[in-house]
Length: 169
Image 1 (tube, rainbow, N blue to C red):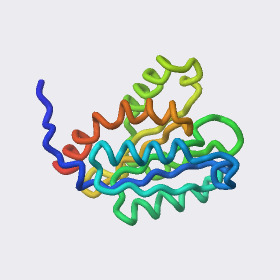
Image 2: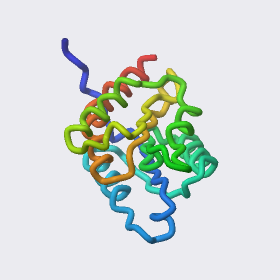
Image 3: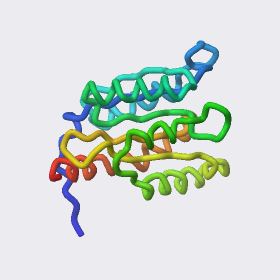
Image 4: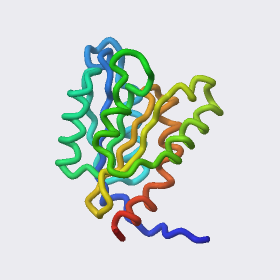
């Protein structure tokens, strides 16, 4: 089977949202967020914003809604995928997703398990906000550089096909 690969990723704008109190306070550098933004730009996306929000579900929800309203077609959330207090990123994303893509999340965890025995403890969520050409792809990723890299290793090769499917809806 052949897959179309003719979608121009430079037409896609993205947002990287880091959910971390420690990054927000300056206690930790925003290494994963910056690396994620840089990689998406290197992959050919047109524009990638970067923001940091506290570990509060309402703050993340507001930031995601703002990114979607601004026309960001890819939104990657880094952090909040564990199961400690305030690790609510998966629940927030599910509230905005119309169609969840569980196979992608499963593949991210499987790929991550090749690098870290802790990867299966992460709760990635991947899905689209609708079934039309304006829908956004939302991705919930671990906040570490390794977890982010594993996530993009899986998601980036699928981007063109995701946006082709949405455009043909």
